[in-house]
Length: 238
Image (cartoon, rainbow, N blue to C red; front, side, top):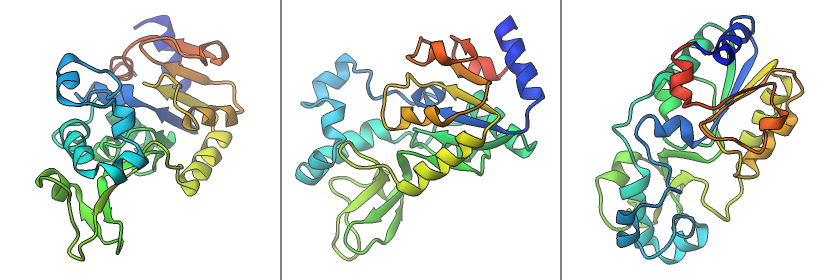
C-alpha cells in the first residue's frame, strides 16, 4: 500500500460523511468500454463519431442507426460490479458514504448494493414511450432489432441524457446538496472534462478533496490528495 492510499484509508476510516463522484473509469474496470475510445473496428462499422450518434438530433432523425450503435456499444447487461462499486456500497451500509453521484448509465452501483445513487446522465435500464410515457425494461431494447415501439405505436427512448439534452434538475440539485455538505469528496474514474457535471465539484467546501484517476485531471492542483491509479485497484486496498 502506497503512502497516498494509506492516507486515503485513514481519512475514510475517520469519516462518516463521504460523497463519491464517479465517471467512466469506474465502469471500464467492469469491462464496459468508454465510448470515446474509438478503435479500428468501430471506424469500419459506423459512419459517424459517437458524439454525433448519441445526440438528440441524431436520435430523432436517424433512429434506426442510433439503435444499431446503442445496442452494440452502450448495453453491457452482463457486466458485474468491481471493487470500487462494492466498496462504496459497503461504506453506505456502514453509514460512511451518503451518496454516489455518477456520470455512468449502467446501473452497476445499484447492482453492487448502493441505494442513494444520483445518475446525472440517466440509465440504460430505464426506457419509456415518447408518446404515452409507458415504461419498458432494457431487455425490450436489447432483444429487439430496428426501432423499438410501444404498444401504442410510439417510439421507445432510453432514459439517458443525450448530447443537446439538459440534465435533470432534481438530480443536479440533489447532487449539489450532498456535495456541498460533504466532509469528504472522492472523485474517481473521471477526467472532469464533461460539463456541466464536472462543475459540481465547485460546490465542495471541505478540506478532503480526493482524486483517483489513471491520468491527471484539470482539478489535480485543487485536490488535497491525488492518486494516479485504476480506481478498482485503489479501492480494493481500503
